[in-house]
Amino acid sequence: MTAKETAFLKAMLEESTVSKAAEQAGISRKTAYKYLKNTNFQKELTKRREECINDTVRYLQGKLALCNETLVSIVENPNTSDQIKINAINAIYTNCKSMTETAEIITRLASIEEALEGGEE
Image 1 (cartoon, helix red, strand yellow):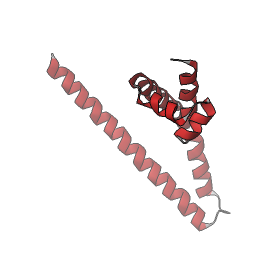
Image 2 (cartoon, rainbow, N blue to C red; image 1 turned 120 degrees about the vertical axis):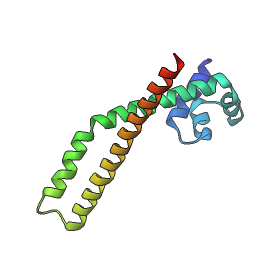
Image 3 (cartoon, helix red, strand yellow; image 1 turned 60 degrees about the vertical axis):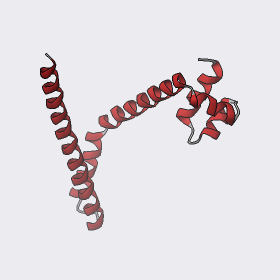
Image 4 (tube, rainbow, N blue to C red; image 1 turned 60 degrees about the horizontal axis):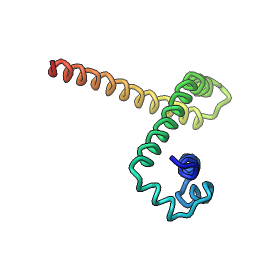
């Protein structure tokens, strides 16, 4: 990958549009779209985006306990308005439901993968 391709790749991870990324990388929009049509560039961009997402998810997972403690303290605080408490309770229930569903999907997926591996032998 050339230095300009690398600069554009980095800019694509930081900017909201191709035009802004091209400008940041010091290339034309035409060149930017040429890079984006390149299969190897697409693969590298996808790989880097996935890494960014995974890093963000790991960071946020590390903050779950703090977020949960904060929500519970809002609910338990006698000085908090009823509407704020309701909002915090809804957030707790919604997040709990989502995490429960995700855990169930992961468990079911593992069972399916195990069954598929067993069928291949």
